[in-house]
Length: 494
Image (cartoon, rainbow, N blue to C red; front, side, top):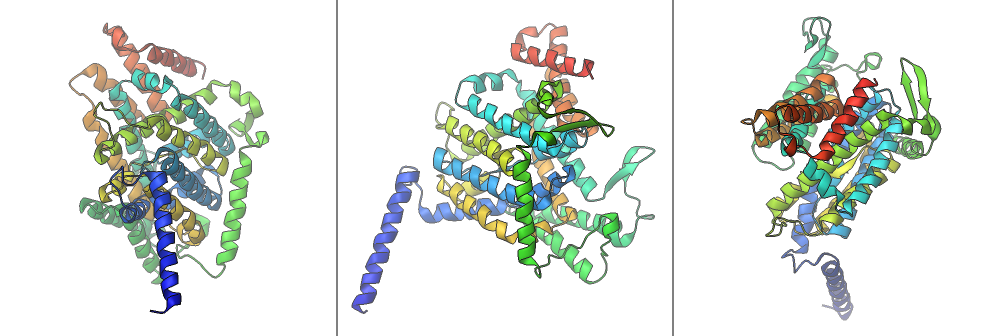
């Protein structure tokens, strides 16, 4: 070996050692019994498991009128920022991204049902993140957490799961509106086979594929299901089985790279629109039957604003705590006394990511339970989260691919995520009717009212009133009683 090559080798060795020392200093690898290779591989595994959100979130938020391309970039950047904060600030291998369920509440309840603009919904998410941050650095978060009975916490997860599954079946054209029964199964006899028909068949196929992959225990099951179903659709379009019909809402599902840079440029332009929306009071409009009834800061005085704010906060707060507890138990991060070291830092990272995500143009950013995939690979430190953050940034430059993914490909992933969330039903004590009935009211109300907020309010109100009537007022926290009064006033003043 020449002297020059030896010098290069020694230099490379010193640089590698220097980088290792930097990583050791930041993430305390030795102390956490971790190694760089495993952390990097765990980061890749976690990203692959969570990456489906890049296809699903823009699809759901686009229903509110938000530009899909802008939401895609906002989703990637919010996930990158949140994961990086968790990695550097809390040193945990937890990955963050805009959460499922809460994005459905954003589009289908706050915007489509309640009549608020998506710009105002972003404002609410931004403020919720600030409140979450304040509570994350004080003891208030434990008090609020303890005031909500465990049965209702589990019911919220179940209700959101049912709601997500219902939305998935609608997006997959399996469930359609029906005058006689409100909703019903698609009628294959009257449906156009080359549009609605094949769309429904592909959704069924996607559910079977995704369920099979998940049942085999493959960590990237959701992502595999999305791409496998999408590829089936591409072949269907190539061979003329699926025929795009833009007038009916059926577009080509083949990504076009001829105008790749044009698509990317338009995507960034749409991203600029979503970023600027939060700071434009003129867009914070609430309308009823097409008539503007309030605008600007006057919305902050309405009860609806606080209902929406609480719903965003409630789901984000308890979903984050639940995920942190679940994944931490699996990874062995919990202390012997059941506490989580650096919990305030982890919660603060999540809160900051929520507000930053709102500024970027997406719904609530939260910690993903799929982080357990990285833990299963051997993740022990924040280096895993940092790795995933870098992959989220790189995904931005593949926008034409992610934006071409149709809803029949994302519906199966949503359906399976709904199933995963519904498993929380086993945590409800059905032997105690005073706990189980309010929980049932909470979880069944969400899909039937098409509103997560109404489900939460019905659950809280019924829990409080039932327990007061049967003489168990002592087990109802005073904060819960205050919330019940607040929610009842909301319905009285409708």
